[in-house]
Amino acid sequence: MTARGLHSGLGALLLAVTAIAHATMSGMPYPRAIAPGVYAFFGDGEAVAPANHGIVANNGFIVGESGVTVIDTGPSYRYGRAMIEAIREVTPLPIKLVVITHQAPEFVFGAAAFRDHGVSILAHARAAQSIRERCSICLANLRKTLGEVEMADSRVTVPDKTVDGTTEIESGGRKLKLLHFGPASTPGDLAVLDLQTGVLFAGGLVSNGRIPELRNEQISGWLAALESLHTLRLRAVVPGFGPPLDSDGIMQTDVYLRELDASVKRAYRRGLSLIDAMHTVQLPAFSGYKLYAIAQPQNVQRIYLQLEKP
Image 1 (cartoon, rainbow, N blue to C red):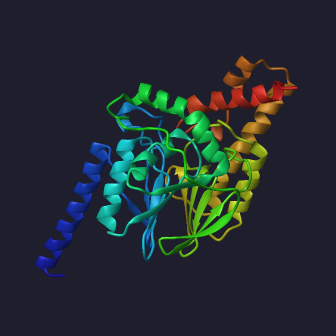
Image 2: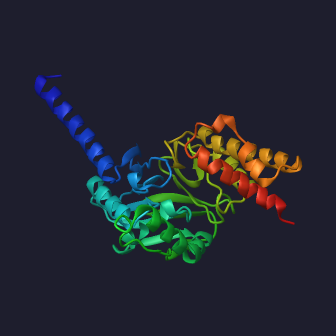
Image 3: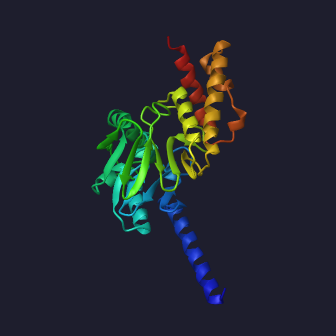
């Protein structure tokens, strides 16, 4: 390589590093290429806080021949608008569709920015119902945590398109399979599979290095969904939280859920009180995962209370 070429290469690298650093410092998303035409934005996987602007979850977009499909939209209008700007840096093609994988607040409140640009928003019918009925409370909680400035213009945006089950669609010149396995991490989970590359956006079904938060789950259905995903030939998996995975990596969520469920049931049968179970039911293999100290006792509580129901 010539000195001029080396200088040019180092300059490009410096610009890329500077762009990433600027994106991180300003709280703006920065896309990472996962496969040809497939990009992901990665949150920090921590609890929502002012320091991370609520950018804790993953989302992304897929560029087809005629347009762009967005998967999930982040925690705020500000973030959704920044996503649009980041996408425009990658491609001039229009954004054709937004797919919401589930109704968790870290994934949905950027949708308003896309709606204001005339983009249709699609979700499973059960997720759309939950957004309509419940997300106003989530939005109020985010405003308390992140502040009015961070959450300015954010609003509940109900999807205008819905599906009732697994569906294959064409969006922006790309064939996508929207996978629904029944109630799992939420009643209306979707996973988005790009059929051209074999990249899966797993939404709320899969976490990597972060404890799943049980909110509106059905554990048996969740485990069945993970088994089904594991059987697919996937090039890469973008989890709802954490770095990308291969197909086998999906099963760390499966292992956590199985061990959690079994441990709480053992504690319940032994006659431990709820408070004692919340303090004593531990899964050491997962203790280094993000949110363990917060989510583990909450997850124990949720399963325990379900066991108490007649």
